[in-house]
Image 1: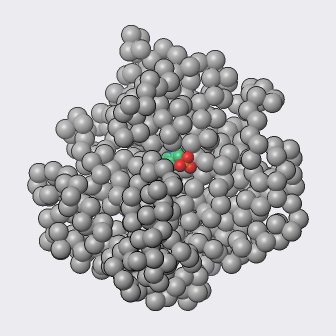
Image 2: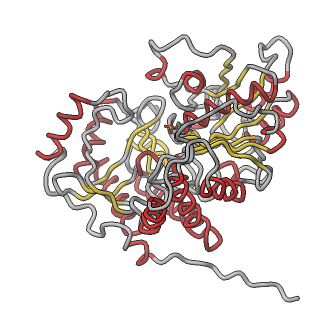
Image 3: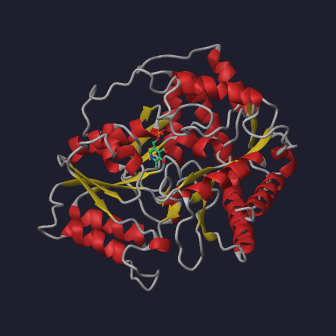
Length: 467
Ligand SMILES: Cc1ncc(COP(=O)(O)O)c(C=O)c1O
């Protein structure tokens, strides 16, 4: 038989353009305009400002693809996607159709079986990375925090061990278990004491290596240190059930693990007898150019926590674990009233279809487009002293802002605040992250057009010059 020639599937920019407001960005007022201001005043009076956005003055009115409007009629390019959530774009017509059809049939079924939920569990199993693919069981939740919380509980039961290893810079949610793994001061200060048995190790943040070394001549000192802690007596790691890690950290500054680190870590887990959990809540669902970020690293996880982009416009998350592990968790031990509502299942199934159809063309495009944007930013950054680093995989791009490239001193909060407002007033929605709050993340919907991407980069570079 002759070898089959694979036809490259190209997603047309025209097709994608129809999903968004083409005219974006288009600014009519400064932000917040008078109508948005009124909403914000009510919001500050009636809503808890402990929410993720705090007092960030963007008010959404309508969303379409990779664009959105506010109540004053301003049209924005959305480089934030609701914090890496809207993978297939806001209000995707196919998702709306699937939800509408499901709405007329069945929505809530509690934690009972329902046709859509089981269909979704089967579909999730088919898109898992090697090691889990079609050899896994899913526990559905409505948030990433709940998925992590469930993982912690199940790990104890499965392994009979109680310690969990997490990493500096980690964000695994803000419920008590996950919050004990999460390291950001603002989520912890005054909220303790936390869950006992958590060990935090250095994450390979190469731009600011805590060992003062450089990759690759460092010989992955951080992985060697993790191995030492996990596999040496008297380090306190005597009862580790699992190691949980983001293959590319989100909250702490969009920091991808360098090649080799995760494979070494997996080996250390195996020697210790600990499970390996890949937290893919932010980096999963195609954002990095592969369905799961861990697939860039050739590591087979024992469990995956997922959420955000899998739901896209609806709350949908879960914990997916190997079948043999799931068999060790008792029936009825983790009920969840709102899990996998039939309507959110219908939406999630459509999202997975859109992401994976045509041999995963949209996901591959995310990888390529992300690389194009990163290159343009790196090129533009050459003569701008405030851009210290541009990094990340696919459409999970972190731009680390500094006072000076040489000293790498993080850009101060006042300048960052003014810069973020500068972007917003020019029609770009984006959020900062990072240990020092000085990393701007580009995490747009995967359907962002190249035209909008180029505009976002131009506006970004133009705004940096105003600092
Ligand atoms: C890696 C990671 N894990 C867990 C979570 C928690 O997810 P959620 O906000 O849906 O509870 C997040 C949220 O940003 C995350 O980025």
